[in-house]
Length: 113
Image (cartoon, rainbow, N blue to C red; front, side, top):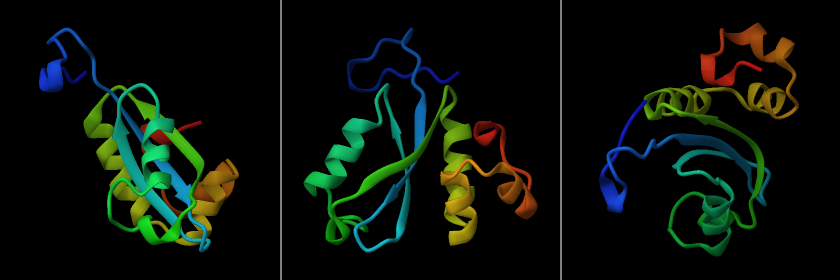
């Protein structure tokens, strides 16, 4: 587990991470990660255009998949892996079609159903 003292958190607070996938208004997918206990706040930031970037001109966005990990390093690894996946594989993940997902590569522990 990763412990953080950033932004006023005590050393006893455990910081985890959500890896998430958004479907954008243009039909594309966006993969991201966010620390904290609730990924909906980050989705709201995307929809509000709080940060310029990929989703800014592709709003509104809809959360179609997310997974929480207690370990930030696992979340970062999963995010990087997902970003390299084909559209078909991302769609299979959204459908929880593990047979199709597993045909491509072995999935990391965070993505195990």
